[in-house]
Length: 168
Image 1 (tube, rainbow, N blue to C red):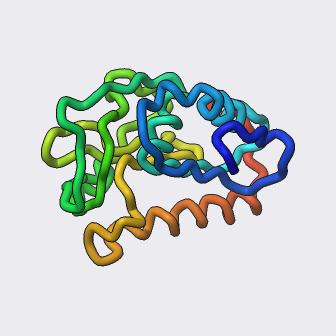
Image 2 (spheres, helix red, strand yellow; image 1 turned 45 degrees about the vertical axis):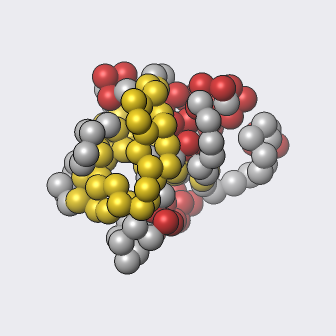
C-alpha cells in the first residue's frame, strides 16, 4: 500500500515495511501509521527492511543519525547480536538508528561489522523486528533469507495465539 494508506480500514495479519530512499524523519505519515499498529490492542507482527527499520525505530521513539559515508554495496558485514554470526549483506543507506535511543523493551538486533552502526532492532518479547540491510539482496547464497521465514512464522503463530497485551 502507499506510504499514507490508512491501515485502520483493513484487517491484516502482519505489517511488512519496505525499503526506500531518503531521510526517514520526513516520512511522518508512515511513522504515525506504524505507531498506531504498535499501540493497537491486537498484536500484529511487524518486519521492517532498510528504511522500514528506521521508520519502525522512529515509531517507537528512537532517533536516527546520518552516517558519515553511509553503508553501500553488496559486501557489508553484519553481526547478529543474539548468535554472534556474521553475514555478508547488500545495503544502500545513509541513515541508521541511534543505539543510545533504543527503548528498554527493545534491543539492537544486528550491528555493522565495519563501522558498528545499528543494523537492526527487535522487541524483547513481541513479534516486532527490523533490519537495516536487504535480506532479499542475496549478499551470500540466501544467508539472511531466514528473516522472511521468521516473519511468516510470527504471523502464523500470532493468528493462533490470543496474546494478552497486559504483559509485565
